Length: 290
Image (cartoon, rainbow, N blue to C red; front, side, top):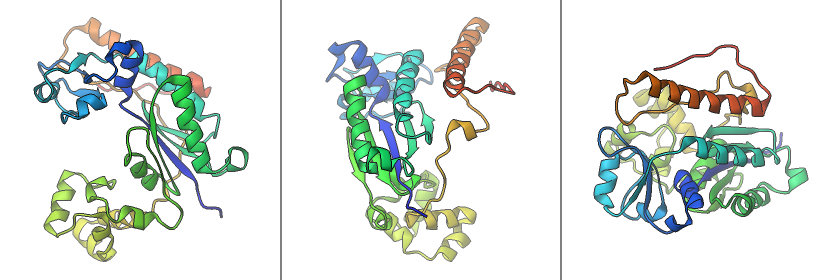
């Protein structure tokens, strides 16, 4: 069985980058795309100029504006971002049918079976990065590895416009010096528990016996042990194999206006419908979560 070749692609500061395309005067300025600073508004995306002030995604908008008072706040335009996202995903599908879209701005590609046509996974990643830049004027960072876990971690290491390749057999060594917070499955609570054990790097976590981790964390501990070794067998799953396609949105403040809720429902429904049409699929069941 041949070694898998997985690419993880993540568009850099995607929403903010699209806004800069629409208004070139924003380039180089601290742009924050997010909800209202009043209420529960959060940052959806921040340009790298804004990130220099400590602004990051999921941060409350009010906090972001305190850190960067000169930030240019833009309300999200999800329809516009969705159009650019679809163009990127369509481009990815030229290289392999095995594309798993994780979110509007990131995806996995399994290119194991298409290297014979397009060249090595690294060559494909470089070409994708160049084409996205040239054809769509967007920046992307990519990670190349033998599994999804390592590819995703690799893509985040040299943002923006980075490309990191982890060769077969080097997964554990690549992960070893990285902080445990980089590892899937290590949230704030788990990180605190590991820190209490003196574990701060993935290599230190990998050195712990799998049995000890399983006893301490249960089934989650067994997964941590495998991930710390750079092991991940999960396949790249295109939408055809998914049981559902969904779109969600969170209001910055509670909304009681039925018309506004209906408009938002229509917008989300249109995005789901576009993804279905692109794949030639139809839905059997519609579920609404409010």
